[in-house]
Length: 184
Image (cartoon, rainbow, N blue to C red; front, side, top):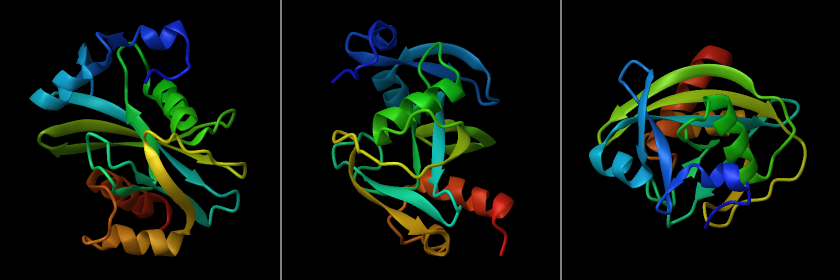
């Protein structure tokens, strides 16, 4: 189902498949390919991910992915986000994905860091952002089945537990976030 973003979004589609920006191992854009090809061939690509925190900073929004997702179905994630489309910047992708997945708009993105996730067939440059939010959260039902505000100590425990239900790339990202911004 094509999101209601108008013809600009349709420019990202090729035969019904999203046209994804292809990156090299060093993080430079080198081309584009349909999403299915990126997944099938394990091409380097990029994603923009957004940590949504409560206004006081003490909680992060954690959601459960749909069982129909092509990557890490039914797992939990503390990052809203997705792949960077051809012709899109990571910040534009972050805004689009935040609106699409959680219906959060009009909030300034704070750039955090870049992090490489290289576990073939997934080879991705993750561009991390953060927002503070106290408004409603509405899930995109095709991608998210539920979610809740999680206290940061509980999220840290999930991040440190290899058996917790966090998605692997999200776990790596939140561990980096804790290392940089919330040392014990």
